[in-house]
Image (tube, rainbow, N blue to C red; front, side, top):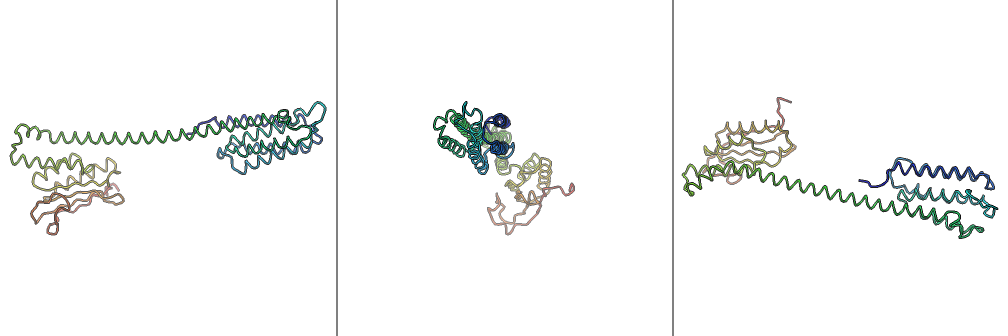
Length: 349
């Protein structure tokens, strides 16, 4: 975010002021001793002004351009002043246009962020005016040096203030974005927590009411159902995107027949479209339905693979008490199903 006056407006005003100085130089061309150096000064000033006001490139003036502007101020001051007779009767009038022209060029330089070069130019004008014997220090006012310095000072203060305001505004924007991101994350946490609570309530409410009615005196079948419900609640936490209604139904059916089902979502399918996700999950539900394995493990595959979900079904030859992957040895287990569900439907490809 940039705070400031529109660039085209500044360029337009500066161009008008610069053209006005050229007009004054032409209007008083008969006052200098020789017109040749005046035309050279006008050309130098015009070139420097045009280059400084080009409507493209960075707002901050390059160093070479600021140096050229300073050199132009030195050159036009020497060229014009050396052709003027400051003891002339009636004065020099607008023939000292170079002072105002230099002030305008230095103001442009300051506005475009090169304050040091602008003040060096003002310093040269002061020193050069002091060196003019007939003029002396009084020339600071009579020739308009003070006015040029005032314009540079105003430009310096305004451009520095606007630059600081732009930086402050940028910091505020970043702070606002961070606050917005933080709020979005908090809203997501709240939504996720509320969703999980709603899911838990819908699954466990009936059993909780049954526990209250019986004061915890449940039958063996009801106790087994409590374990199944606990597994379903655990799936909502660890399974995340591995769940849809079809998968929930088949997982519960498998658990009720005595199988151990483990669902692990490690983020590999977060980028799937809704259509691809439904296809993958429906295929997972079919796989769970088709196997009679004692242990069923389904987990996502990290991104970068063509496989979305890996499903393993095992018949246990041991004690059958495994409740999660890795909790006991699988050396004696017999593989009933090994399925890799692709991320992209091969038929559609």
